[in-house]
Length: 545
Ligand SMILES: CC(=O)SCCNC(=O)CCNC(=O)[C@H](O)C(C)(C)COP(=O)(O)OP(=O)(O)OC[C@H]1O[C@@H](n2cnc3c(N)ncnc32)[C@H](O)[C@@H]1OP(=O)(O)O
Image (cartoon, rainbow, N blue to C red; front, side, top):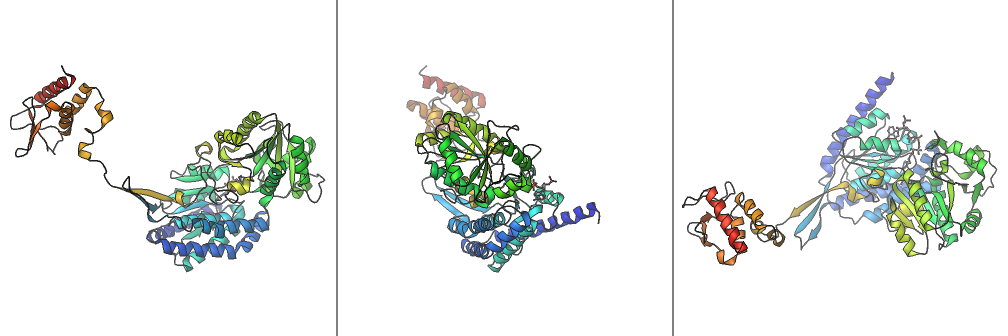
């Protein structure tokens, strides 16, 4: 079979999935809260039941991360996520504002396409399927080619669980014939209404270029600043737990540590005590050659690997308990490759004089992962606030990046798609959840009389009266009430039998001229010129001239 034939069949596959997804969309949009709850509960239970199997598959297929932590990610994206979202209102009328007289109505966005990263290939499927269905949307996944088997197995498990719990057929599907053409076909298909792109920069960019709403996660490059007031032992413990979780594959995990001259030695001591190996310049260079292709882009062969695997590959002799490799850096940019995102068990290490320098350095580092996440370890609340202006959507205090950013150890919603805001080219800066997958509609009652709205607008009355008058000639009788109301002694009398106002100027104007919305000519034969004159008189009267 030629390459061209292959592309054609994968494109046909994408079209079939889109068509079936649309059928599911039509059915799912009528599901009730209870029906949806039953489905996502069943998915959560299936996710928990298969968490180990899927974790093992993912590690075997990709070589990234650790089975135990991937089991936890699957648990997080099923059981924990279910507990978090089960009571969330995502269907029909979800809020009412008595005072504003508005009802908020949630509608599904429709068929979603999800791009799955190779770093979280099973947990992202569980998580995106759960949040999509919670908002009554079917979803089609485009798995990463290097993790297709485990992603497709997860899709099968999730779809079976959902359908058994009453969901329409094909509520969760995946491209099985993988090609960039098929992914593109799906992205651009009219059936797909929204794309969630979690993955490498190329795919995220492609999603944004598909000409439809897309929620993309850009690259991260999270610095962790250990400020002088920090509890160093606790800070290092949090960083190490986060950095070693699934061998650093979560994009909110720390990529470098910033210390101050005054606590540098203590931080180094503590890092070493907790399993960090400090590489010398030569060792750092060797590791960087492995970690990066073309100087600064991640080499997938060393993503999500243990410190020992990387050290062995670089011929560095490290002890059996080494958890993380650390390389000191003196700047940001291609000459200092560890200043870029690594997603593995390696950290850059910086020393600054004070928090102002730490601020500047954080901003520089964040340029390579703008809008994503940074963390700060400090007991000084004022310093923490100063960092609130940094270009990161999550500024985490006294916690690990992985656990904090994904909402496991913080008050953030649990998520595996972390918005990066417009800074990072993303339409969302929050942790993505069901609320980002609904269209919000409003049922709105009138609470002000539209008829008298303009005349009762105090600010509008302050306008220059002449402008007011000119405006009036081209508008309806409402304006006459308004003008007349400006000077009480000029108030016109309403002649109800003839349905017109009798003005003291001698002009009479119809109240209800619905046809052209302009003051109409009355029985007295008032024309527009006369009308303007009358208005001028009223203005003069108002000004006391
Ligand atoms: C909360 C969180 O943790 S979310 C985590 C999300 N972040 C990430 O995944 C980190 C970003 N990921 C990356 O940078 C990369 O995916 C790495 C470094 C992990 C792995 O890199 P690689 O596998 O070498 O490259 P990459 O992921 O870009 O894709 C490899 C190829 O598959 C293609 N591909 C990726 N996804 C798809 C897809 N869904 N359909 C078709 N093709 C795809 C890419 O276009 C690329 O093709 P190319 O080689 O012709 O350019």
